[in-house]
Image (tube, rainbow, N blue to C red; front, side, top):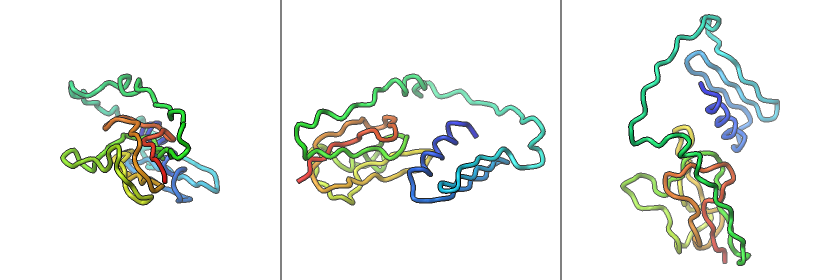
Length: 164
C-alpha cells in the first residue's frame, strides 16, 4: 500500500462520522481511531520480516495524462461574492469530480438548475468509491467551478448556489 493511499484513507475517515476504521489486505493492516489517536501497522503476517518481492508495474496507456499534468490544474478561488446569497458547495475530500452518474447519462445539474438541500449535484470519486455530493442548500446553481473529470482537493469549491 502506498503512503498516498494511506493519507487518503486518513482524510476520508477524518471527514466521516465513524470513530474507528480497520483495513487489512495482503499482509498490511491499518487501524485508525479518531478519539483515541491513530495508528498504522506494518505487515502482520509471518513473512513480514522477509524482503518483499518487487511488484511489476505496467506501462500506462498512451492517452493517460501524466501526474504532473493532473497536478498542474489550478484550484479556482471563490469569486468575490458581490451577492451575499451565493453559497459555495465544497469538496469534502480529495478525488475526481464527475458531473453525471456515468458517461452516458446527463449531468446532475447545469448552470441555472434549481436544487434542494438534499439533491445530488455531482460525484467525487476517491479510491474507487463514488461519493454523491449534495447541494446543502435550496437555490439555483449560479456557477460550476470545476470541469468534469478534474482532480479536486479537500475544501475546494465545486459550485456556487444562489440561495433565496
